[in-house]
Amino acid sequence: MGTSHSVHTSLARPSGLNPVHWKPHWPRHYASKARLPVTQHAHPALFCYDVLVEIFTAFDLDDRDDLTACARSAQVCWAWTDPASQALWTSCGGRSLKDLYHLLRAVDVSLISEVLSLNTSAFHHRHDGWALFLYCGSQIRALKCSDHDWRDDPAAAKGAEGVLIRSLVHRNHGRTFLPSLRSAEWHEYPETRGALFSLVPPSLGSLNLTLHSTMTQHDIETFMNRLSSTVPGLHTLRLTTAPRVSVERLSYPPHLRHLFLDANRIALSPAELTTLVSCLKTVETLAVRISEDRAWHDAVHFGTALRVLRIEGGCLDLAALVSRLHSPSLHELDIRVKEGCEYSSYYPKGHHQLATALGRNMRLARTLRSLSLRYSTSWCPGSLGFTGPPVMLFSSILEPLLHGLTTRLETLEVEYWHRAVQFADDEVLQLAQACPELRRLTLSLGARTMCLQPPTVLPSLVALRHIAQHCPRMTHLEIELELAQDRYHSGLLAGELDGLCSPLRADGTLGHPLQTLELTIRMLVGSRDSDDDHEVGAREEVQRYANRVFPSRYRDKEIVFVSGLDSSS
Image (cartoon, rainbow, N blue to C red; front, side, top):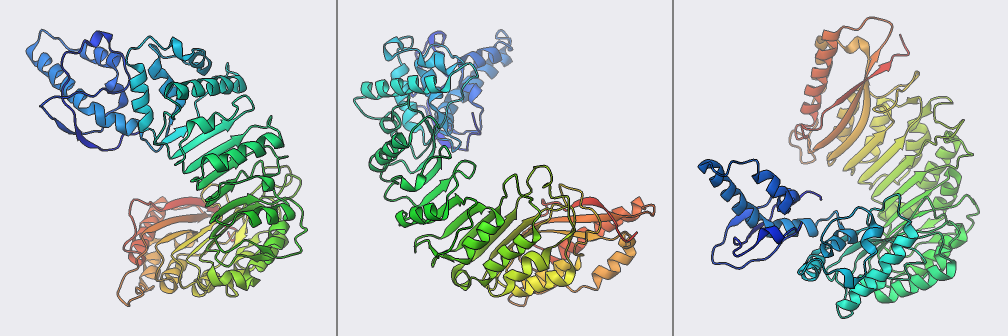
């Protein structure tokens, strides 16, 4: 049902109600002189009559104290009804049409096909069902898809649902019963026949749309044309189609600002991407996957409106595209390297080529403030990311970016998981010096979730001071460091850390403004027996040092310690 938010309201106790004939899961409104202000944190089960009966039968109603407890509990439940209903139906998590259909039934059913098997004339079991249906429907802000049982045929169920939707809209004099809807999730089948357009109001802002693979290109084009005219205010669209669909030929809402194309189903060639972006004059956020073509010969112009680009594809395809990318207003670039199953995810030459293409595109440096590079490890035979020599993170990935692209960056995220990686303190220093405006930095090498192998080398605790000293505006840091076994002795470690003076703020005062520190320490173990007491002491010294360098950091973000093999032992 979701978590109910705190809502301040009041609702009077009911009078003249025969509870035996009342079996709702949802609220009623009553008028009375008495008002009872409450704060709602109750579970929706408290508004189900059957549940209350089970609770109250546990009391001895002949006992005066129990009788008083029952009376007070009932009064509280009535007072909570209205705010609980609002929190339930207006929840950000969304409600499904199946939830609404149950309001028209006397009993609940599990199969959506059983719910839909009734026509509107059969909804006579509840005298107040229609009014309650319209009231609760008017509260819904977010619509999610109904869950289907494995015994249901999705296409048949959606077809029956389409018939029911049109019938209910007709009963409501041609008006939707979801007038306050702002976002929706919808699966369109040929059997549905565009029931969505009867259901959603023109004010709908966000739509997560799946066009089933049984729809033809003509069906999809017709549907999108209707969508553009019926819901002109749509600003966010998440679209999933069959791979064969030409999405660049579709019509999109005139005021669309955010378009996300499902990367698992839709891949665009250079020509298709060029055609698509030429039609999206108002889009500010675009998420696409490019196909394995590498035929990027001409510059790709994304227009002046685009501010956020999230793009996925093979390494060489991305490098070719990035080198020709022209987007004069681009503020955020999120790149996900995802090779096909037939290619190895370990491709240092290609990864270096992509980073070099990014660093040399001076047009990006003028406006880009956020850069994310994520190198995916494919779970295919021979490409698990656990073969090959160690990755030289700085020389292969980070250093090529430092030719001007990073000077004004405020966010830099790099995720590169491989069985072994080498990254040193002086390289962290060079990175920090090249990115003085950074506010968020993520350098994820997989130390928390995978066992890095020798000859892995990670930076030491000195890296924290480098970052604090040269990135005085940073508020979020995620990094993985290591601590050698010969430094476990708390006295030695404390002496070394005390010698590292705390850096100053940007205004010259003591302390650093960083608040979120997601720190992983790889505790190296070798052939020597480890001393548990010294290891515990070392952990405490690391905690103290992190608190000293970043005194404003949130303490609820615990430092994670993992074990690693020391290749020098």
